[in-house]
Amino acid sequence: MSTAYQFYISSLLIYFGVNILACWGLNLQIGVTGIINFAFVLFQAAGAYTAAVLTLGPAVSPADGGFQSYIGGANLPFPLPLLAAALVGALLSLVVGVLALRRLRADYLALVMLVVSQIAVNVVQNQNSLFNGSAGLSLVPEPLADFVHLAPLSLAYQWFYAGLTGVICLIVYFFVHQITGSPLGRVLRAIRENEQAAAACGKNVFVLRMFAFMAGGAIAAISGAMLVLFIGTWAPAAWLYPETFVLLGAVVIGGSGNNLGVMVGALLVPVAFLEAPRYLPPIPGHPELIEPLEWIITALLMLLFLWFRPEGIIPERRRLFPGRAVPARDPREPA
Amino acid sequence: MIADSSLGGTPLLQVTDLRRSFGGVHAVDGASFVVRQGSITGLIGPNGAGKSTAIGMIAGAIVPTGGSIEFAGRVVTREPAYKMARRGLTRTFQLSSEFARLTVLENLLVAAPGQRGESLWGAFLGKPYWRRQERALVEQARDLMSRFAMTEKEDEYAGNLSGGQKRLVEIMRALMARPKLLLLDEPMAGVNPTLAGRIAAYLEELRDGGLTMLLVEHELAHVDRLCNPVVVMAQGKVLAEGTMAELRTQREVVDAYLVG
Image 1: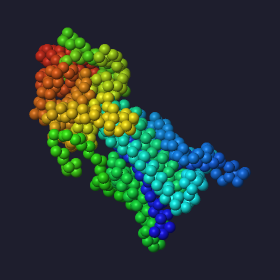
Image 2: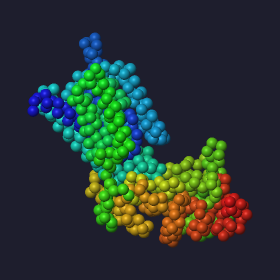
Image 3: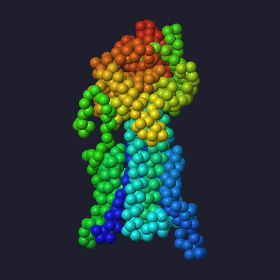
Image 4: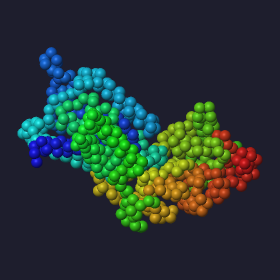
């Protein structure tokens, strides 16, 4: 395999891992608990910025030749920036959740989330001192390069980072699997189905929804942190609100409520589907059409699934319990 | 007029001068009644009498604008629904409120109180921590399903059931919480007569087992069969209270409700 090809494959694997993480976080919120979070990318961005400014050294003033201004600059070693990112993702979710989750119905909540996402982009773009405004942050150092004695940007480092992303995926999978496979996950699904009835069963719906929102926010932040530590740069253009819809498409198409399903969705939509046009011949006379087509086709695919297979490629698993008196039917059979 | 509070049993639920306004509309306007231990107390009245609003306030889903609610010797007037459920007051809803994409068995399991695997740490510690309790709860739920002739539906998504079967799921779910008081908001509404009769028989069985219930119901034959005493509400107020036989003799009740 040529070096260039290996670079390409390892990059794809890292993107895949980052998107899996994001989809698991979003699935915990939307798929499992029914919280429509159209601001999901905001929490990913919060993690990315946190990890970036904690990994970068102190900002150098323009007078001394510096080209970017930001808060933080703590020069912390990995995995501290990653852990801090998760914490910031959870805390930001707490703040947004307190404002939005308590009283708003699902459709209003979705609108509020969209607006919050837009406000955050505007604030970051216009407050240069926070995260270097529209230009964004760059030259974020690769984590652990010295520790593993690998040259940053080398192929070996790239494979190392792919492995590191895999390890983070395993840890996060353990976390989400323990939740979704437990009685706690069952209560979250009950809340998704009927909040009022869940409250009548003695469940503190607000606290449980807040938990799912914060856990999803923390996972989103981890995915953002892993991405920025790989690409070394992060700017508002990377987290405009449509990015949430790519992840939402992955969750819907893969199988909302199923951790394995959304993993397939993460492979299909943000990775394979958005990567495929690279291999398409340019449209004669309109070479710029390819990118908008990606969005159009993603949206159409999502609509088709919502119409014809709303449960996604791998539907949410029906939970059966051992020792039943009657044989279980095939869950795919109609009732 | 509030009559005959001498019927047996100590008061489990005491509602005093309960009020709730929506804008200028007084949905419940100073209602007072008692539900005694071991009884099925009926709550009847014409549409818009305030029955469901009263049930909603008792269950903690609607915040009263005035009055007080005392349950099991404790004032619980503005407690939220989940706290009321934890105190042993569970309810069913006027409209089917099953967890549609959970199986029937899971619907029942959700309602069981004090589950070890429902906390964050319990979930993290994994199956070894909560498996034994889960098994016991599954057995308890299966006993209930067997009692309600729903064993075959164990693995069915609750959303796929018929209207009557959904009512049964709700009642079983409420019973999983081992309530002290069960509020039933029109449990026979939209249910075919055969199944409605079965539900009535189940409720009788539960009453004979000592469970206290407050039943909102429009079908007077069921109220007659099951409830003693019966509270009649009209225009947000309690109009009368007594047995159905007594109520049939009261002119204002007959005028307000018993005949068109």
